[in-house]
Amino acid sequence: MLQEERVQPGSHHSFDHQQDIDKIIDLCGRDRSNLIQILHQIQNIQGFLPLETLRQVAIKLDMPLSEVAGVVSFYSFFSTEPQGRHTIRVCLGTACYVRGGKKLIEKLQEQLGIELGQTTSDQRFTFEIARCIGACGLAPAVMIDNEVYRQVNVNKLKSILAKYE
Ligand code: FES
Image 1 (cartoon, rainbow, N blue to C red):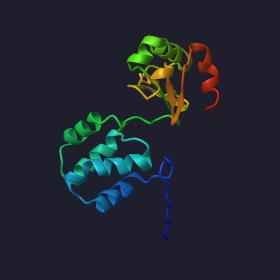
Image 2 (image 1 turned 60 degrees about the vertical axis):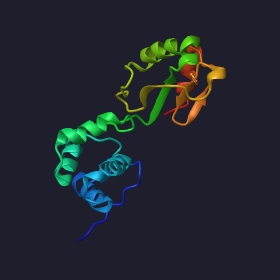
Image 3 (image 1 turned 180 degrees about the horizontal axis):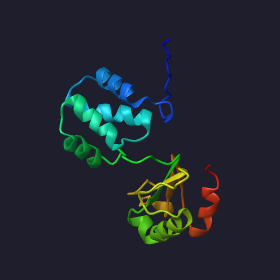
Image 4 (image 1 turned 120 degrees about the vertical axis):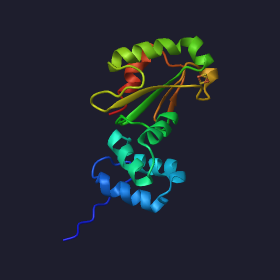
């Protein structure tokens, strides 16, 4: 019996890696000039791009693995690690830096128990920095997913984080 499994974009569960990667490559066109588009599509469905995925893409496109891995590490929107359900970006642009952005980073490292670039073990947050998110007048700013928090100080962090499951 044929069973069709529907995969929602952004759902990281029912992903049959091998088959779906093959399908995506065939849909985009099995050509190395489509590499970035292919990686995008796979990351949309799978959430991240582990080494095994890169290897499979390299074989299918007849490219060296090192070249595929090089592209993935060049673009910051690609990730080889599982991402948290929410992404915290502390702005370290000039205005935010001088008005306490660095302190926010230190406090968040302490509260989340992770370093920059890492994801909490419960997969709740991924922690990153940003370079100016357009709120310089009300620095320091923090962005969580698509929400911008302005004039954040270390005392506000706990209650802001509590909004996110
Ligand atoms: S420098 Fe942080 S919002 Fe512009």
